[in-house]
Each structure stands twice: as C-alpha cells, then as structure tokens.
Image 1 (cartoon, one colour):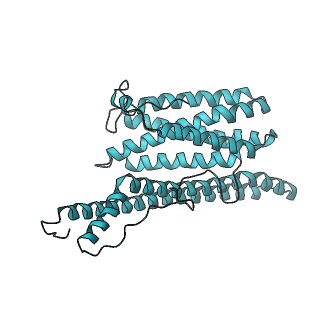
Image 2: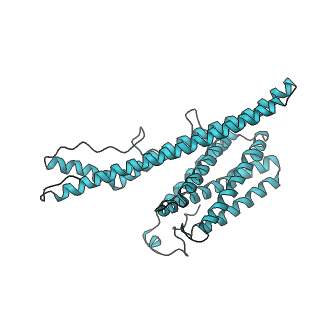
Image 3: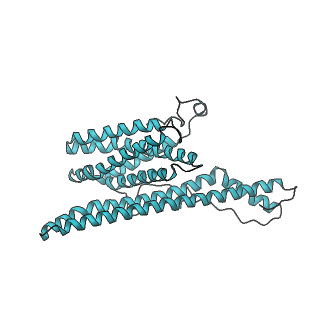
Length: 323
C-alpha cells in the first residue's frame, strides 16, 4: 500500500476501497472458473457414460431397424441434456456478472469511483474505475432462462435448473470440512435451499398438474410430491443449523442424495411420459420460467426493517416471502 501524506487521509481510504473492489473482482473470477470447471467435468462424464451405454446397446442389436429405432429413441434425451448444459453455462456466467454488478453498485464501485475523483483533485494520476457489467440496456446482467435460439421447452428448462442444483450441491461438497469456509458454506446452503424451494413450487404449481391430467398417472406424481415434501422438511432443518453443528453434514448429505434420486427419476420416467402426452412443452416452459422469475423476485425482496430485526423462531435466515 502506498504511503500518503497526512494531508490526504481521504485519498488513502478511497484507494484502499478501490483495492478492496479489485480483490472482490478477483474472488468472483476464481469462483466462476471453479463453477465452470465443475460443470464441464460433469457434462464430459455424462456424455462419456451415455456414449458407452449407447455403443453397447447398438452392438447388441443384430437388426438394422432395431439399431435405427434405438438411436432415434436416444436422440431427444441427449439433445435435452446438451441444452440443459448450455443453459446452466449461461446461468453461471450471468450470475457471475450480476454478482459483480451488485457488489459494484452496493458501494465498492462508488468508493472506487470516488477514489479516482479524490486522486484527481489531489493531483495524483488515477485510472478510471471499471464499470459494472451491464446489458445493452444499461441494466445488470441477469439470467433470463432463454437460449440464444429462443425460449426452451419445459424439459430443456428443467434440465438447466437440475444442472444448476447439481452444481450448487457440488460447490457445497467442495467447501465441507475446509478451514475458515463455514461462512461461505452457510451462504451457499442458503442459496441452495432457496433454489430448491422455488424449483419444487414451480413443478407442483405448473408441471405436475398439467402432466398428471394429460397422462392420468397419479402414482408417479403423488410420489414426486411426497419427495418434494421430504426435501422441504430437510430444508427447514438446515435453515436453523450452521456448518459445524452436530447434524449439519448428515442433513445436507441426505438432502443431496434425495434430490439426486428425484432428479434422476424426473429426467427418465417423467420426461419420457411428457413427450407422449401431447402437452405444448414450449408454452409450458415459458410459464415455468415466468413463475420462477416471480418467485425469485419475491424471495430476494428485503424484509421490512422491523421484521428484519425480530427473531424468527430460531431461524438463521429471515422468513421467506409468501408466494
């Protein structure tokens, strides 16, 4: 840190704020690279496993017609998986940009910009502070849930959200047991719980009723709703725990296993069923994306000042906004 004359105390404070801002940018960049690495490794493993499984199945076929039918049956899930990976990739990049813009607009950017002004006033050269990442409209970047070639259908949209949940669980797993990582893990688990609550809500409000009515398969959707209820119970337990508490690790592990089982069943049985129902999956995908955006906006709304200061029955997080 440079030595400043005693007549410029404000200049020192502003330059320190600018350095803090640049440190935040570096931390966000490292975090984004880690997320992208996890995501790319997961899709590589999935594609390799799918390719081996399909190759073995084709090798076991002696009839060319059977081979063609098998290949055609495997194309839609593979395409949905690829679109899900693309959507998850966009979500990671957009979330990184939105986080940077939020930090910048939340004070660090203002302090850094003031540093440039103070340095200029003091006669000290200073490069202009970086601008937050923005969209072409001048707004902070945010994930829209749409791909470049148009809105995804319901199955591609849900695969993207499933990949996002897998990524959050993987990041939690990376932090577990690390020294000085409890605060980061607690924040990440909060994000995970919020994402799970929103995801289960949009499925129960929009996806399950439409597919249940179209297919008449009550058993499949009753089981899915029971699994959601079990996940919400585990989430309610995590919300009053901290990393390091006696049952925190076990509860998070059970939640990860249950969600992984639920996602696997959805992407196999339920998605296969959805393709046979005749439901307009494109329109359903748009409704899911819109409802998710509404719920995320409700949950991100700051609580009233008095409510934020009051205890919430042992919760370490404020209560969720009503739907």
